[in-house]
Image (tube, rainbow, N blue to C red; front, side, top):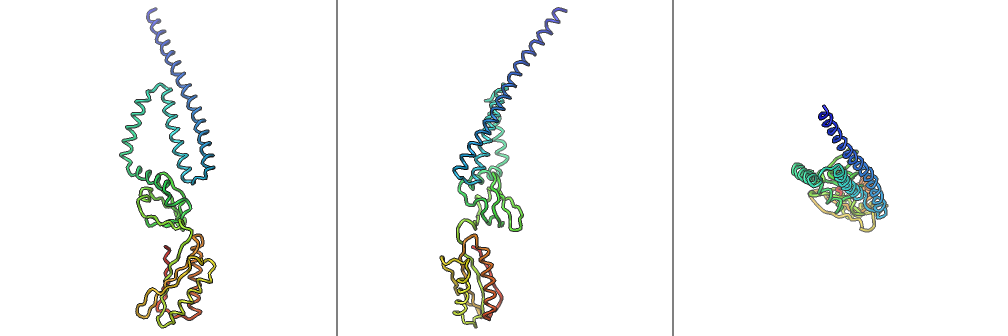
Length: 273
């Protein structure tokens, strides 16, 4: 009986000792976790202030903050695990193996991730730019790690994978400060073509949104049968391009009617290049 009681006491003492030891580990791990979270927030705040002073692009700053936060969180996780007594070397090896397996299964996502890095680094477009890519035209609303959000003119949100964007053709209408409209108008060859040319040029010169430099041009580009094609090329600032194009088209239409310019066919086309 006494031997039985002695064994029970030893077992209880053993588990109490294990519990005390594990309690210490849990408490130390919690302390590391709490202090680590505080340090991460502190470092993130300091980095955020430094980035704000440097006037870095919002896309780049957001991406850097997220990457730094995840790196510190990973280090904190490993530190907490080590405080619990788990062997970190084998744990890191397991994470590496898992990372390799996940990487092989997510090659498309890794391509998009790499594409996001390339877009952020080389800046073919920024948030707020108007672009055409993959048959979609709209304003760039956000550049995330894996995709870019483009909102169309009717406010539809389109998410384009960064891998395609970084490897495909992108037309950025906001990159340059000036843009030229290409308007083609067909008139009858029975008109005085020199007079028509001068009338169209006056329309451009009288529009305040049309720039003097580069100078607007009106060029006779084609003669087919009884149809003469004029290419009308006004320049404007990028911010005024839509308004300028609309105003010029309306004034050209009114001028054709007012001056009684004969048209073989009513054909006006605008090409935004």
